[in-house]
Amino acid sequence: MLILTKNKWFLRFIISMAVGMIFGFFVSEASFALLKESDARSPEIIVLEIPEGTSERIANGQSIPTIPENMVFYSGDKLLVKNYDSVSHQLGPVWVPAGTTGTLSLEKAEKYLLTCTFQTGNLLGLDVRDHATVDIRAQGVLAIGLPSGILLWLFSLGFTPKEKTSLGSQAE
Image 1 (spheres, rainbow, N blue to C red):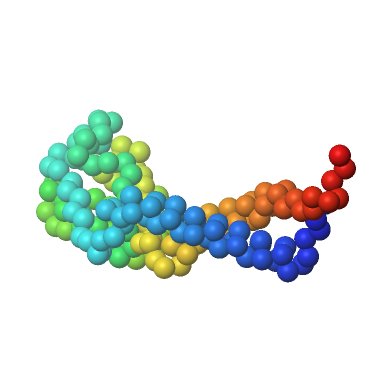
Image 2 (image 1 turned 120 degrees about the vertical axis):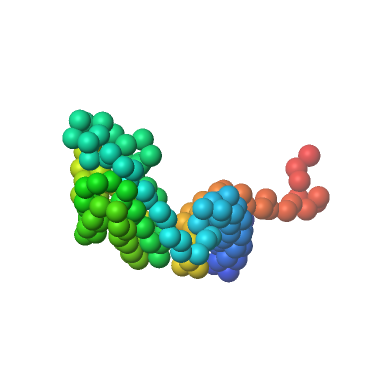
């Protein structure tokens, strides 16, 4: 059996890692391309309207169908709360008197659970996500490429070239 030298082991490792990273790049970028529509946008102002009669519905234990219990945003977005109800409402740190508007800036990517007077459970979940930066994209490539390259290298160790035999040394 042919024994591989250190240089050949290293060369196999480099080639395997390169193939793994190329594979990781294509898989990661394909994933980001599929998710691009929701992520690749500039910060927006999202309007949340509290309809008239909300306080009465909440007092009776009825939910407001136009207001979701959880919302997804991206860092930099602003949530504009328009209160058309006859009663003041609160969303986390934002107090919105009747007939006015309040703004909540969502700068930091995090999951928030805010007190909310226009939900039956008195809570509103906000999921603020980061935009896909170069760092996040590189992490995606590394998370797929490194393990793939190492596995490819380990599998390649099982395949060593057979030793060549000359015709004169074969026993007949």
